[in-house]
Amino acid sequence: MPASPSTARALNDRLALRLLQQEGPLTAGRLKQLTGLSRPSVADLVDRLTAAGLITVVGESGEQRRGPNARLYGIVADRAHLAALDVRTEGVFVLVSDLVGRVLAEASVPIGGDAGTGPAVEQAVAAVESALKEAGADRLHTVGIGAPGLIDPATGDLRDSVGLPAWHRSLAAALQDRLPGARVTVENETNLAALAEQREGAAHDRDTFVLLWLGHGVGAAVVLDGTLRRGASGGTGEIGFLPVPGTASLPSATDCEGGFHSLTGAAAIAALAGEAGLPVPDTVDGPGVAAVVRGAVAAAEAEAAGRPDGTPRGAGAGRFLESLADRIAIGAASVVAVLDPGRVVLGGEVGQAGGEVLATLVEARLRRMSPLATEVRASTLGGAAVLRGALLTARERAQDDVFAPSASGTAGP
Image (cartoon, rainbow, N blue to C red; front, top):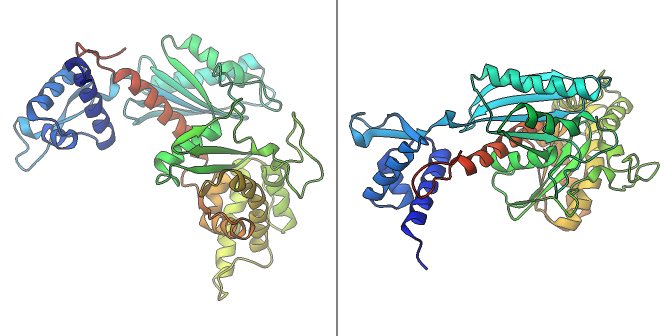
């Protein structure tokens, strides 16, 4: 059954908006080429979207740079403003952007472990309000939050998790109260990092892969056939609880000590560095141990330059990286055996710091441990992936709403 004229117009409008989002400003002629629509149809949709306040003339193109055919049409970026939050155990990072994702303001606030829930939430909300003011925006359309812990698939709320601050669970509701009309959503931080790596990072050419997050803690995100998998309880990727050899105990339902976390969490990496005679960071967190790994890579590369095979082994930095790769491969091999993802991305601050040196070592170990061919790549986004994934998710949700012209040609709220 053919689409009605109003439905066809809405589909054409959405297609044009998506092209302008992906390609940037375009002329009507270029829109005609990319959409396959007739010239009159393109002229009509340009008029509709302009009248709806969704697109506008942003410049001119071509040698002559004048006349109707040279006009460049772009999305009205300030039609909606978005916020993205990366909620950590020790604080919050915030950015505010326009509808096309251009960052207008950033803020961060450390939150001490001794802060009560009320004061901690107030500090985080104040950081969002400050960034919004700096961006020159009146209101937020969508807020995307990335946080550690499990997200209840039925409610979308952050679950109570042992070891995580209580203020994490109160933040979304507080933002909803203080930002009238804003759409506030929460997603697991590792899942957001995977979405960012898929769109803009080390998995941009893959629709099936696993992100292994290595930072203060460890986690994983699973993308199969282009879809992020969350599991029946929202717990897909809680790899810190994975029982593994090489630990002194088994994990419990409330404590991942004795699981994969005990081999590759920040504290474990710091201890491993000390055993190899490397400097131990003053602060045992993601950035702290990432600095140790980054230094080890630089030292190992210098060491390897003097050997024919180029393999970073021996004393100090090389031995540390080999031992770390052994530990990472234990958890990665379990994931590969079950999911056969074809690619594992080493994410988080540690994955990015280890770079291709660490990724190559882990891949070699997987090749010996598993018959399934698996590439290992280093994250190109590192710790910034969570914030980037939160922004991409917020932008997509906002655009789904704003880019929804009705049959009469007007836009959504």
